[in-house]
Picture (cartoon, rainbow, N blue to C red):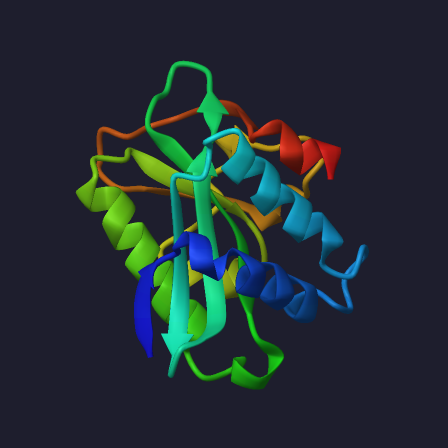
Length: 165
């Protein structure tokens, strides 16, 4: 498995992957496809990594800027998708670890995610009660500061595609 930055040639495979990975979710993957397409169109796709297995896109992890009053250089993780046949084999974990490391290396202050607390805790995400997102249940909205000085408090706003979806 090779973790790399997406290329233009990967876009169709990523759309197909999002459809397959979220087939059982509301919208059957179309919501996630619209989010990624809109982030690309608005040049708000900070980092999009793919897991390439023998030339096949087995997973992707997307990072985009978020707005938090009084804080800068924070990003949101999502969507993350793994081909159903590759789930449970560490593909998602490898993508997320690589993406978080790259953001930290680029000087990001931190990252937020809306997702399963037990899964994202393994990467250091936690809900400290300081950040919140729309009507999301607090325990599912988590953050990870990349350094001790990267404190942030208040409402988090994602790109418009997350609320339009």
